[in-house]
Length: 239
Image (cartoon, rainbow, N blue to C red; front, top):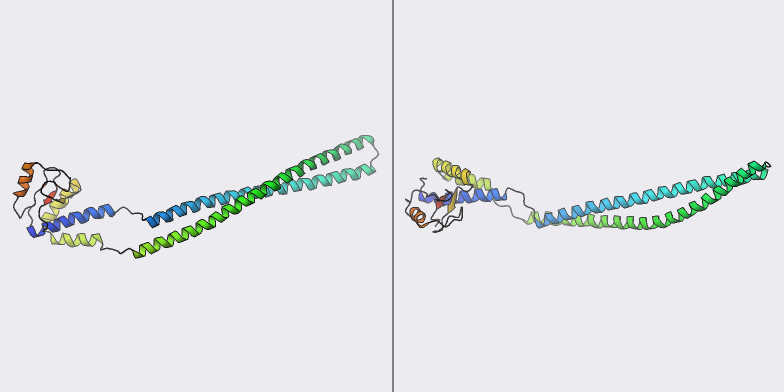
């Protein structure tokens, strides 16, 4: 590649800026944003837990209402049977009514036992729900604090010059022919141009053989030598 010695450093700067731009193209997550993401994930888990806890309370409350409804029906059935017994004289009919009253009493006793167990269980379920809801509120505050910290960190981070602007400015300084050769080489090996430190190419990090080093050092000043290993254009002087 033919290139004025005064532009060798510009070529290296262009290659370096392009590599930096590619390295930074993937979005980076700051520690503050990681804290936000972690808090949001925790909030989602806690909300799911609170929802499940509330659902368990709702189910048990519905079960209590069912038991109470069944109990009321059975007590009416028991009373109706007892009232009917007072007026019934037929022995077979009285046996049926006594059996019905006995069955109602027995079922009422079972329901009262179920109701007591349900009341004991719903007390624990409500405590669990209240704890889950408290955790949700705590995590909501944590998310708000984390977001505030992330916003503060973003505001405090200085914005550098747009790499695209820097690249355009550097490309304007280089001859079109040299620029085309550089981009062709960069397309081939992803580097294009790299610094030569006297022994190795910074593009491929290979220590070059003595003959290759000699050829590079003997390259005319108005030319840019290439690495015999990776093909990158080597800048030998950045002073």
